[in-house]
Every structure is written in C-alpha cells, then in structure tokens.
Image (cartoon, rainbow, N blue to C red; front, side, top):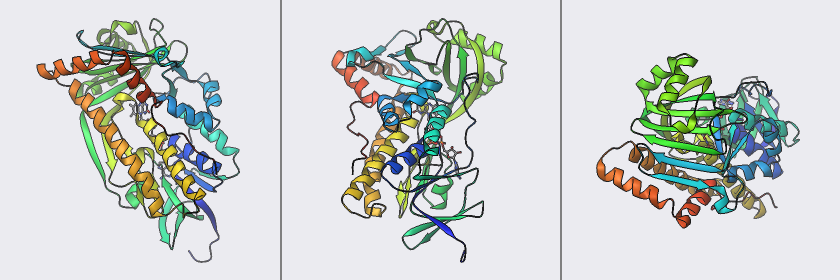
Amino acid sequence: MAGRRKKFYDVIICGGGMTGAAMALCLANLKLNVALLESSLPQPFSKKQRFDLRVSALSAQTVLLLETLDVWEEILEMRCHAYRRLRVWENPGYGDAIFNAENIEQLQLGFIAENRIVQLALWKKIKTNEQISTYCSTTWRQLIYCGDKILVDLQNGEQIAGDLIIGADGAQSSVRREFQIPSSFYKYDQSCLVASVRANEAEKDITWQRFSKTGPQAFLPLSKDYASIVWYNQTEQINKLVQLDEKDLALKIMESFPKELGAVEVIQKGCFPLHKSHASNYIKPRLALIGDSAHTINPLAGQGANLGFQDVICLNNVINTALINGEDWSSQAVLKRYEIKRKIFNSIMMNAIDIIYHGFSNDVMPIRFIRNKIMSFANFPIINNSIMRYATGLGMELPINFER
Ligand SMILES: Cc1cc2nc3c(=O)[nH]c(=O)nc-3n(C[C@H](O)[C@H](O)[C@H](O)COP(=O)(O)OP(=O)(O)OC[C@H]3O[C@@H](n4cnc5c(N)ncnc54)[C@H](O)[C@@H]3O)c2cc1C
C-alpha cells in the first residue's frame, strides 16, 4: 500500500440504496466529507417504463426526511401515489379494522413509491453535492484498521481512508461479514408473490390487507390505474403461481383476492422468500451498520425501508450532537448511543410483526377469538388514532437535526 496516494474522507458509506444514499445527504448537511460506494446504480427513469416490482409504503416520517433532504418533489415528479385509508380484515368475515387519515387531520397515511425512484431522486441530489464523492460500479477489496482510521482498498485500484465506515449494503452485507458481525436468520414457511397489475375497478385512495387461512393478500395502489399486489402463501404454492403466464395468473388472482380488487391485468410478476435477520451488533470501532445490512423484517407490515430511514435519522442526530459537544463523533462511545436506540426499537418492531404473522396464521379458536377482539378494539377512535399516529411515524419524536 505504501506509495499510493489516498484520499481522506470523514465517512465512507458502502451501498447507495435508499438508506445509504439518504445517509450520505444527511452527513453532507452536517458538513462532513462523504465517499459513497455503489456497485450498481439503478436504470434511469422514464415515464414510459413499467412499474417496478419493488415498491415500498413510505410512512409520514420517511416522507418528512425526504422533504428535508429536498428530494420529495423529485419523487412526486417521477411517480408516487398517496393513500388516505388503510383497511385490514380477516376472511371469512370476522375482524375488520379501518383507518382514515382524516381522523388524525392528515391528508394521507402514506405513499407507495418504487424503491428505484426514491433511490434515483436521492442520487440526483447527491450528484450536485460537493461534500459527497461517488465511487460507482466499483466496490471495496479490503477494509483495514489503521490507527483510528479505516483504509479501504477499492477494486479499481484506488485507496481511500475515513474516520467512519457505514455499511448500507443490504441484506447480504459484505461489510457486516468482513467485520465478523454475526446475524440471526429466520426463514418463514411462506413466500410472497408480488405483481404489478392494472386494476381500474379498484378504489385507489386505499391500501388494504386481507388475512385468509393460506396467508395475507395485500393491495397497494400505484399511479393511474395501476397497483401492486402481494400474495403470501406456502413457498410451494407461490413457486407454482409465479410460473403461470400473465393471463392465467390474473385469473387466479381474481379467483382468490377479495372482490374489492376487481378485474386485473398482470403486467409483471416475481416472488420473494420471507425471512428476517438481525445483526448482533450494529457497531464496531469506526463502523456502523444501517438499513437491511443490520436488519431485515417480514414485509407483512411494509416497514423495512421505513426502519432503515429511521436508522439514518438516529445516526445523523447522534453524530450531530457529538459534533456540537466537541466529542470524537466517530468514536465507539458515540456510535453506541445509535446502537442502543435503534436495536431495541427494531427488535420490538420485528417481534410485533411476528405476533401478527403467527397470530393470523393460526386457526385455533381462542387465538381467532383474541385477534378478532383486537381488530374490533382497533376501531375505537382513541385506539384507532393512536395506531395510525404510531404506524405513520407521527407519534415518534425523532426529527432530523442538522442545526450546529
Ligand atoms: C416483497 C418485499 C416488500 C417490501 N415492502 C416494503 C414496504 O412496503 N415498505 C417498506 O418500508 N419496506 C418494504 N420492504 C423492505 C425494503 O425493500 C428494504 O428494507 C429496503 O429496500 C432496504 O434498503 P437498503 O438501502 O438498506 O438496502 P438495499 O436496497 O439492499 O440497498 C443496498 C445497496 O448497496 C449496494 N451494494 C451491495 N453490496 C455492495 C458493495 N459490496 N459495494 C457497493 N455497493 C453495494 C446495492 O447495489 C444496493 O444499491 C419490502 C421488501 C420485500 C422483499
């Protein structure tokens, strides 16, 4: 390594997906110099393109972060759809809970956006930010501790160094593995089929999820006549469904989904295995993990990306407070504050989703009775509004803080 000129940064972020790209913009706002590594940038957007299969329900808190980073207008400009109501019910006809943004004086409960569009909007902003240097279509070859710095050998032959490295490289995080951070892994029995469909009979201001004996079925509205549907079932069944051609799959969807969906035309389809994972630590000296590199969650409640964005807000605020107080902002003591806050919260969320998942996969009478009572309670205004505030992130006091 001797003799090679290296560039120094405050922070090196590995992975420029939704969370890594948002983190880069946040830290640049704190006047830190950031290097962002991304091995494969997404395809540019055109309005003629079909809807991507990977979409996320973005909570109000996530939208607030994206507005603060000045990328929300760009997302709206490309493609994104608001939903005002959320309905969850069980088939056959037991519990039925409905949530309406009007009841908490909001215009919407959230937005459905394609992951690629969120990422592209963040990258457009990154390209105009002088605090951020991007290293695209390459990745790291070696990560080496050197005193209180991390040296990164890139595959393109360059060498860079930073005070902190952030792993934002997704569920299969190579950064997490390189730092030998163990991660628990649980594979659910079910998989899910995701399809983008044309559904011109369905109401478009609502997202819904119906629990049936074989697993949940969800509807997420997209712009114009389009929607994304998610069908959970045993992996064997999902593998069979995904092999059907578009016409036969549309027939199966119309047979099995609630009548609220109406007629559909399948545009694209794919399937995802269901699993969850959780890193035993989010930090090591001069290292922090965020987003899917630290935790993946059952997509049942559509919270994976939202949790990643909350990691971003939390790490930003912890670092900013340390900068204000003149502390070593990339030290283990400072990073520990981030880990403590986020690990507890993410664990609670993962367990809550599991209770819903296992609770609804069970047809034992007392459990069915309890869950239907819970669903009825969810319609009481005080409980209903509190659930909505929590689910949209409005109940959580975690504003992003760039003030120095
Ligand atoms: C079926 C399904 C439905 C979902 N629905 C929702 C939903 O409704 N709402 C929600 O909030 N979440 C949802 N999620 C979860 C959400 O998609 C993820 O949590 C989110 O995409 C994670 O973002 P990330 O940036 O952490 O990781 P990723 O999106 O995986 O990004 C990682 C980035 O790192 C890059 N990278 C990887 N390795 C390297 C390397 N070595 N060097 C450089 N770059 C690298 C990759 O190219 C990629 O760009 C869903 C997930 C699934 C599977």
